[in-house]
Length: 64
Image 1: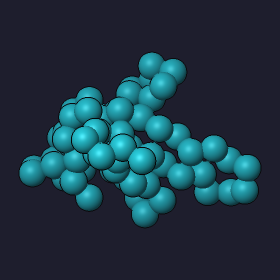
Image 2 (image 1 turned 30 degrees about the horizontal axis):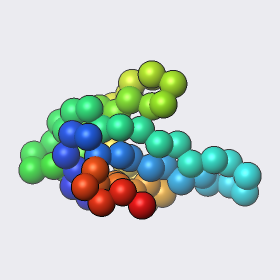
Image 3 (image 1 turned 90 degrees about the vertical axis):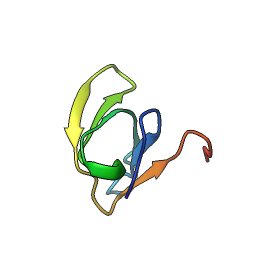
Image 4 (image 1 turned 120 degrees about the vertical axis):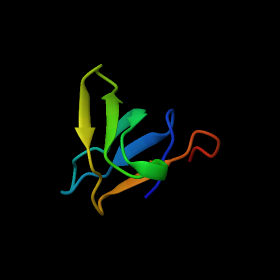
């Protein structure tokens, strides 16, 4: 999983009815775009995370 600043991290809900969490990547802390990432969620909360298999990167030049 590789990302650049400005990409979106989408953490998919793990149970039925749970919404996806979307965050903007504001800092790439690993080498060559690898995790961990500092992210900012839509409510302004920031966190450092290493995404798991329930997550995907949506690159800013190729949004879904």
